[in-house]
Image (cartoon, rainbow, N blue to C red):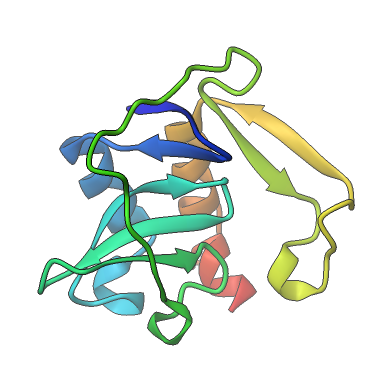
Amino acid sequence: MNEGWQNDDYLIVLTQDESCAAMKAYRFDHYLPGYTLLGLRRWDDFIVINSCGVMFTVPTLPLNASCVAPFALPQQISLEPDEQFAGKIRWHVKPLVYGAIQQTKRMWRGSLMNNMLNLSFGGTNGTSALERCI
């Protein structure tokens, strides 16, 4: 995982293994078929690429192909590390898509990949937390 500030965006670029694990955990094959996960932008949006090589962002919740927006990474990515955010993920107490505003309470949690997997597999009866929110 490579992460840091690129201008005004905090970006997290996943390795291929991390991408595969997160895609499986978030059930990309079901919610975003034909898209590949590249990383996160500002913690609220996935950076994805479609089968034609076109890059987009899509909100992490709800994970829905109708919500994709065009996005382009600069040719040369130079991420400026920030120890305050390194290895952490921002969780809104109430997700933005469900009515939260940017200034609402949020919490920071460590171990980005563990949090991604816990969110996905934290459900009961085989359902993911993501599925319960949609």
